[in-house]
Length: 109
Image (cartoon, rainbow, N blue to C red; front, side, top):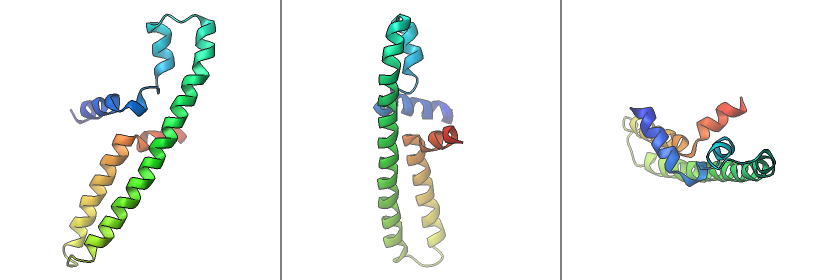
């Protein structure tokens, strides 16, 4: 059930609309081989630019979360800090999942 929800979130993210588009366009739009050859690099460029934007979003979000965690950490007792860290790690994972950062790392490997 969780993976289905993740997939639904990804499909709603406009930055992910172009990741598998060439194959889908070929069949749905009935592209000729010449059209596909001309369109494929354009779609790849769009996908690359959106991937870069997701990475930038993640870095900015990571900085915001880290600064917030540090500020809250200073207020909490030593006993409370591990739970705070766990809470922020869960939030970071949700952001990674939504932005597809884990997917990008797997593709790079």
